[in-house]
Amino acid sequence: MKNFDNFNDYDRKENLHFDSQTVHGALGHDPFSGAVSFPIYQAATFRHRGLFESTGFDYSRLQNPTRQELERTMAILERGERAFAFTSGQAANAAVFDLLNPGDEVVLCDDIYGGTFRLGDSPLRKQNLTFTYVDMCDPANVEKAISAKTKMLFLETPTNPMMKVADISKIAEIAHAHGLIFVVDNTLMSPYFQKPLTLGADIVVHSGTKFIGGHHDVLAGIVVLKDKEYIDQIQKHLITYGSQLAPQDAWLLIRGLKTLHLRMERHSENAMKIANWLRTQDKVKKVYYAGFEDSQGYDIMKKQCTGFGGMLSFAVESADMVKKILKRVDLIYFAESLGGPETLITYPMTQTHESIPAEIRDALGITDCLLRLSAGLENADDLIADLDQAING
Image 1 (tube, one colour):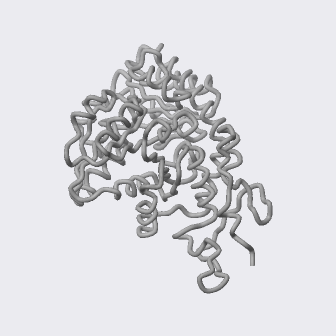
Image 2 (cartoon, rainbow, N blue to C red):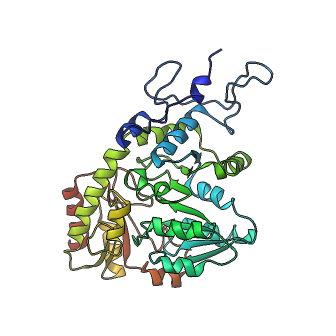
Image 3 (cartoon, rainbow, N blue to C red):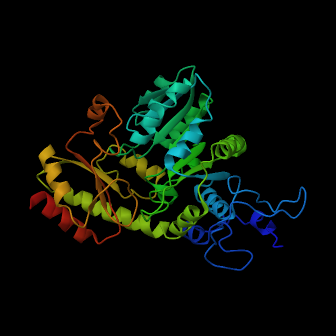
């Protein structure tokens, strides 16, 4: 029988540069056959050598070689102790919130992804958890919001869709001074541009559906833990609820990671060009992009990131203009999600943030005139030409 011991003995490759780590992963190849493309272990169960003699793999709900390769690679890239792969970003968030007990409070950034808001607004409130939303761009707001019940701080930076930026290190100091768990959603930046665990975060979450997978062909979520403190609890949640990522989906993320460094550079380059062009258009009233030198969080981005990412939002002169743009874009697709090769334009008010109450959306600027754009990998001049004909044609 083949020996699986090699799967449990790997070099974290922490001495390599990021782009080499993404290409080679944890094991990087099949230790049995030498296959350079890590295999999809499409198996539900694994044969035992004898009583109390496991290969290290028993049942794919518990562990699977393909998923393990993805998880180990994500732990390397995020500089964490352990990673877990889930069926979606929402499933990953649910596992993180399951670290809390009834009566606990979470303080989150006000411009939170609509799915995260929905998760906290209904099912978790039934478990007597409290969710409080504040503008985390000012650390003083975080300090004021903390109560005796607060057990966790949850941050997106930059936020979706308003691209607000918060200082991870400063919020980490607040969290640890109060003995709180500090979670950062790193979906929009990926570990290529931003590594929250190195800045003081305890947990990083990703919608792996986005830049990690990078091809609009898989749903996935990732949780990366800085140290061993919460490993057993997250693992127990995954085993109990059965929300682990399937082998083929894990393989798609492994494949996507191999080009993450290349894709993120192009996403960011295209976003910058598009954002600058949009600023020249009379019918565009405001452009939100973290790469502008006059943007709210530019100095913080320069301090804690190595790039500005591929996401931007912009407000146009009217709701009718929104309808016109969404009807006329051609090369750019009107579709939800982000982070893939194709540039996508989204209407947050009725799509990604429809579950957020109207008064909150209005206060944040998520109005009927706001559009969000995920810059893909096409030629930027072609994308600008498409926007030009949609806006001005």
